[in-house]
Length: 124
Image 1 (cartoon, rainbow, N blue to C red):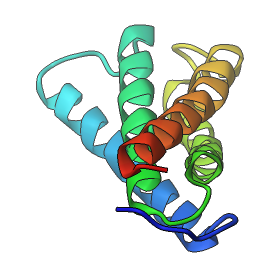
Image 2: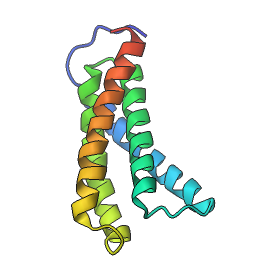
Image 3: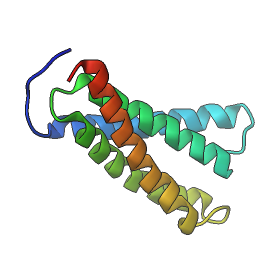
Image 4: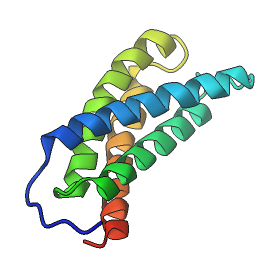
């Protein structure tokens, strides 16, 4: 898909945020069903990396705007929601000091990277 739209498409930021949050929920549920401790750092890192990278990449591929920023902004907004939920669920296990950089900063970087990768696939 080759588009010539300029600027950030805010609709895609919202769609991306919903995709990332949905993927996080789905991956968390699937890992929990297999008996994996989803409160472990490894599981949190895997879920964060997979959902934010894939979500950013999907936005980068589908959106006609400047997609790396759209993926990054969507991931940043989703990260805020993730950190709020994670601190409620995992506060005793990990704490905000660990979750903020992992779910917030790493998630946003994965979203930016995914957005850039999606834009490269798109051909822009």
